[in-house]
Length: 103
Image (cartoon, rainbow, N blue to C red; front, side):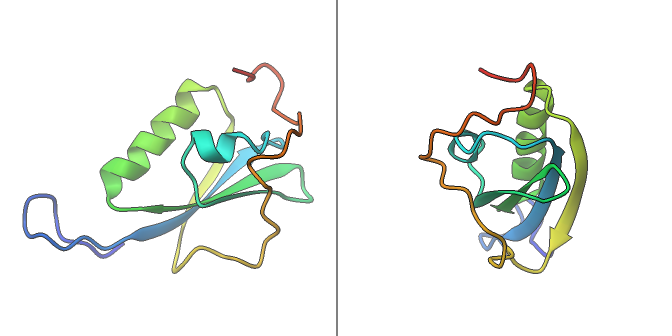
């Protein structure tokens, strides 16, 4: 991610990441985790696509994921958020939350 270090200028570059979690996360978490999109993958994982302004924002999201006890599979930097995946509507009322992680 190319960006100016914190406090060393006013311009910030946005970094894009895809975060993979074990299980199919309920779509309501897209809003709660403040991610660009959430999609259920055929291998039983959930892909979160997120744009972050700096590493602190990325670490903040990863802390939320950790605090919720969600099983993290991977964090992969991306050139841009992939819009070819089917996005789950965060306003839908699906109940596919991972076991033991409903809040």
